[in-house]
Length: 492
Ligand code: ADP
Ligand code: F6P
Image: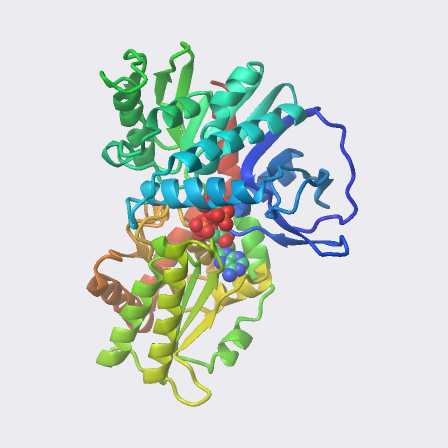
């Protein structure tokens, strides 16, 4: 996304459609001479929402990725009005790094690392959610639709409901929602549930996530002896199913709140368009024209299973199942949350493994693992998707995983193979992938070799699998996701 450097001050308060997310779609960097530069923000939320906002002429409220003070609203050249929310250095540490990413993130990803429960972080999370909500009230027109995004802002629906009862409020969670028995660990569980219930419609990626929330809403907010002493005021009816509201909860104030699953997707047509312009042969050539090119693309996050993927590859080289002269693994890792201990440790281990594997199996001028630790432009990234024979997506837990869908979108000719963790949300839709259990190294190795052998021995079978998944992402793109959610919100 490109941004006009000169800010245009908009007419405040007149927006009928407002999206609020922790991040704006661009990170803004201000140099000492005051010049601003813009880079795309990391992550799947931005990938999914940017095209939606472009087509709906909306206003996007969010943090510009810097703690350097206030900033005027500005517009992207595609017409999205960006309304920056200023965060202080303390907000960054306690709201973003702390409560969002060292408490909620691990708790919602099945405790892959232990969450930290810190009252000060919680209080800052509450205050920052107020700040976001107040910013929304300053840009939202009377009766506007406000779509709140993700785990960083779970209190915003409840706050908005109190500040602006005229608004229609939707909430979408971009990460998994954990089973009730895990969520109940959170000391502030009731406040989070009540915050979410300020929405008219709450959306999740998968029916399982919606079910988890419904169970929880009943057991947490209605549990006898719960610490606010609230009566059993939440009733749950029905079950959630994909893309339609089939469950309603009665919130404490008597409103009916719709709960459903809306699996997020990508701007498939635009991915296909970009993929058609890349020079995949050149990428393969620069990688030494390997017979088998394997690709990994992730934010450098401990949930993504990058280290386990590298270990599986190393063992296949060691056993001779893969030939180091003919095989290359390209791992592209976007820097993420770099000051947090578990992220630093993961990066150190990944980089140590890359060094070790190359030390053992590379030859001069011919690494067996290529590792990039940075963001790439879409053209370059999609070039890698097109070039790769096999995409390895091995998260221990992932809300959806758009990288898997992007890879499939780039293989409309039926080439390539996707090895996908059964714990990625996308495995539900991309069920013709080679599904593996990333907790079991043998399973990753087995599925990788089944894919390698199928591409070589029975390419028609591999092609059928890829084409079936390609049709799925063509038919279920991000427009369908946004339309389904917003239609549900409108007709609620
Ligand atoms: P998450 O939201 O957890 O980061 P997803 O797979 O859902 O994971 O989304 C990641 C998004 O970030 C995708 O759209 C992908 O294209 C993009 N992305 C990942 N790594 C890079 C990179 N190194 N450079 C540019 N974009 C990247
Ligand atoms: O998709 C999950 C998500 O956490 C988004 O909420 C977020 O925008 C993205 O990944 C990147 O994470 P961060 O904003 O912490 O860099």
